[in-house]
Length: 126
Image (cartoon, rainbow, N blue to C red; front, side, top):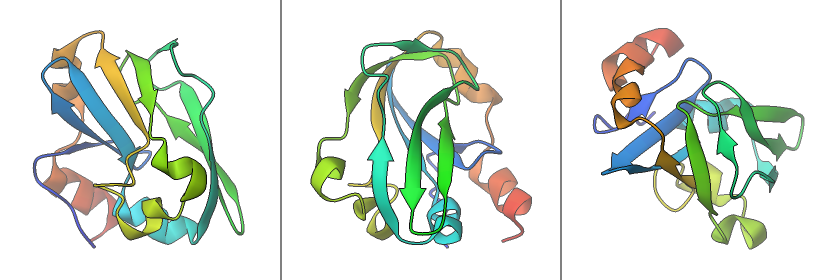
């Protein structure tokens, strides 16, 4: 499994990559492996400010549907358009082309409360 050290992680298996006052979010390699083949992603919160720990969408795999939780408070400014036609990008490239949303952070410092790669590895037993 892959755990890029430049990312922050949540106990709910989301990752966040901060670029200034904006960030990209997705699910971790561990999460996509646990879910299996992803067939659909539903994110209907574009333009909304979503509070930390609130649901911002769902991901549907062949066997289950799972909620997506916002790791920090922010406004969703973009939903990855590539996922409309190709949701399996999350399975093949969860930290790259498989990102889910771009957000403007309400408080960039709140990212520091999230897990570093080593702590997330410990959480998932890797």
